[in-house]
Structure formats: structure tokens, C-alpha cells
Length: 141
Image 1: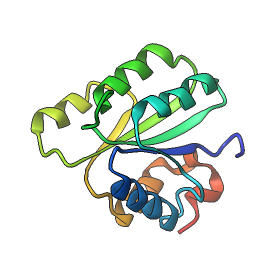
Image 2 (image 1 turned 90 degrees about the vertical axis):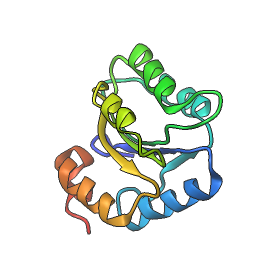
Image 3 (image 1 turned 60 degrees about the vertical axis):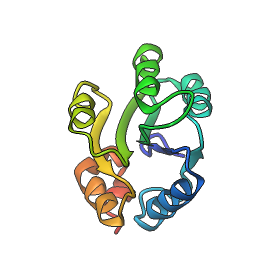
Image 4 (image 1 turned 120 degrees about the horizontal axis):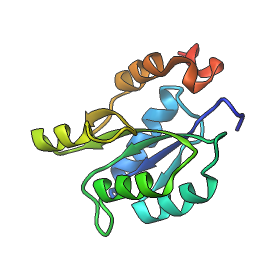
């Protein structure tokens, strides 16, 4: 992984959704090898030790998960991450307007999608993030 290329993480407690989202991320040419996590704790165990100014991470995050839900995960990120450049897309089955509004309170969150994610959303995300993704990804379609 090069300095300019962010790592992509997909966090969802549903194995089927996790698999589908992994395929969509790959087919959308966002990342050839995204890291997948069935629970937020394992994802935090992965992210916290790599908190550095050279670290860029794009996270697709489910809200409703057991043990640590998406909101609790974000609270821990806010508390623990001091250097990494992290962007989060909430991907949820929730249609709650209050959850959408709550997502605006977090600096990390850049978008709020309804499950399942779609390849077109990934293409638009790539376009919106542009050079943050690295030049080779920003131009790939």
C-alpha cells in the first residue's frame, strides 16, 4: 500500500452483506483488497495501532451491530485517533431521520447510505474523493 492510497475497511456484522459490499468495493475499483470485519472491536484493534499522519483509511460502517454499534465505534475513534486521516461512510438498513441527522455530528462521516451499497455509489464516491484516493484510483473506472 502506498502513502497516497487509503486502506479500505468494511465493518458489518452480517456475513452476507459484508461479502456483497466487499465485491462492490472491488468491482467499483475502489480497492482490490479491502479489509473486512464482522465486528467493530476487531476493526478498532486493527485501526488504533496504525494511527499515524501517513495513514489514510476509508471505512464503510454499519450502525446496528452487537457489542459495539457504529455510533460507539465512532466515539472510540474520536477519542483514540489523533493523526490518521479517516473518512467514514455509514451503510445502514436504518431509515431513521434522527440517525441521518446524528451522522452530521461526526467529522469522520462523509456520507450516509442505505443498505445494500451499490456500485454506482462507489463510482460517485471515487469521483467526490478524487485525489484523496490517490491518482491511480481517482482516474480508474
